[in-house]
Image (cartoon, one colour):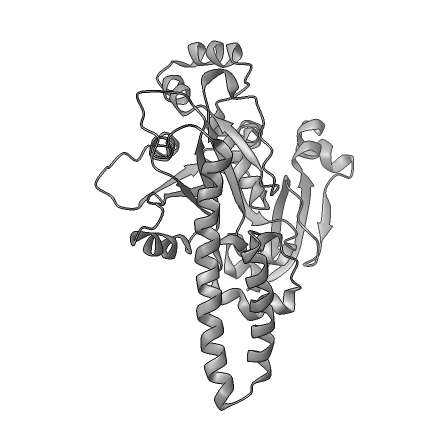
Length: 343
């Protein structure tokens, strides 16, 4: 999954990106970094099976260049952003008179709305451009598919003009297939990262449009990364946190993308596989290897919680916690699978 970190200048998105990924090369126009998704279950499975290797799920974070009002670069920036699967909009709430604020003061809602409007304008431009092309094509030949696409796009245009993200517009799957290739920005999941002061990391902010948010004190996270493990635990405890906010953000993005984790585990490795919520066993097998999907016979499934509670594979099997499932079985988050296949 690719998450684009967007936001206005001086919101702290570059610092957040660097802390998340460790990438600090200032010469890159568009920075990319991959991070592991923290998951205590992988650690537990590695101990359970005495695995030689641990493989976590991963997220790719991309630093989207600053969005500026009336900027000629904005169109290119947002065109690159179409490659993203999700957006994290960084909004400044921290107070620091030494850090310039282009809008003249801290206002979470205003700054978020500025970025929101740029995303909406980009999609509106795409809709209008596509509608013009459809009208030209319909003058020469009336095609049913084009007529359907035009109807969908006109409804999208009305929603965008009302300031509504397309990800909150209900569209049935058949209609969605017609316009999916246009890759609208606001049809992707979007959440806000509020860059706050030290004492505000446990707060919440409710945006009127219902977008979800998470608080991260980037300055404090930088200090936390410099500490040893014992000092880090004490510092987090003093802040009322069980883990760094960066970890919380990574997990938040993972779940917000409607992703779940399937495990395979054994002496060789304990491995987390990322799949979409609602994925059947056959497609989940393909996430591991296409040959497994092609030759799928059945899946032997036990849930992580059940296995750990039983204490051993033998006891879990004695209790009937292992199940044989077919290709239509819908994988649950935390399932551990052994796929039987033949090619």
